[in-house]
Amino acid sequence: MKKIKLLCFAIVLMSQLGFSQKKKIAVVTFYANKMVDFADLGIGADVLLKDVLDLRDNPNFNLTPLLEQYHNNFFNTYSKELPFELLPESDVLNNAAYQAFEPKFDLSKYQAKNYLMYDKYKYIYEGLGGQANEVAVAKLFADKADGVLFVNIDFALEKGFGIGGTATVKMRATTRMALYNKTGEKVFAFSESERSKKTSVMVGGIPVMSPEKILPMCESALTELMGDLSKRIAKITKKSEMKL
Image (tube, rainbow, N blue to C red):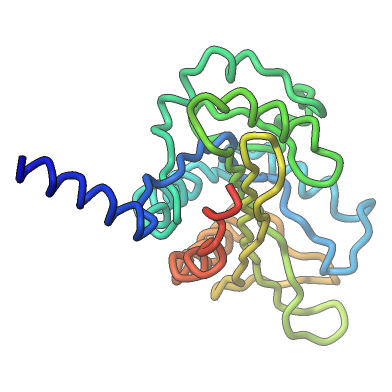
């Protein structure tokens, strides 16, 4: 009888303290954009787009190790700062409904070259005009998760110091994370970015776009981004569980 009373007391106490299990979230996209943005350089697409496409298609421009590093840090380190739990990736990637899902704004074979997906993740557009995808994929996991999380990284060249057509350039790495609840309503969406320590040059107003120059800058920028990302994620997502 005494044990029963103690158990009842513990249940009441935990209830009063607001005890509850953490909400569960399914990560539904995880990819890197291979199209390096160059808008900050003030160069027209007719001048640099071919070089960017050539870089994208060059096997030496291999972002896979960078994406793997970011993925491992996200699931092994950053996830511990989140106010919710992540579903095991196998529950998402091996889900037949997820693999069969055809999102709105699905990629053509040519467009798919722009994105490097981690493992069996699908490219699912979210953001402006993406409500159909956000609602549909949230419903896919509504019986297992309280929401869905979209994660990606991209890279952009930025002009540094210089005179005329000769200047330095740096790379900026940006990660976007967007969380939607089980009905597809946005809980939060934010981007965090950092510039690389490594630099390259512009000659005649055109940056050197070889993998040997660009890839180390991407790596440097991502390293800077990951530096204190745990703290930034924790601060931004602190109250998000209450909105799920």
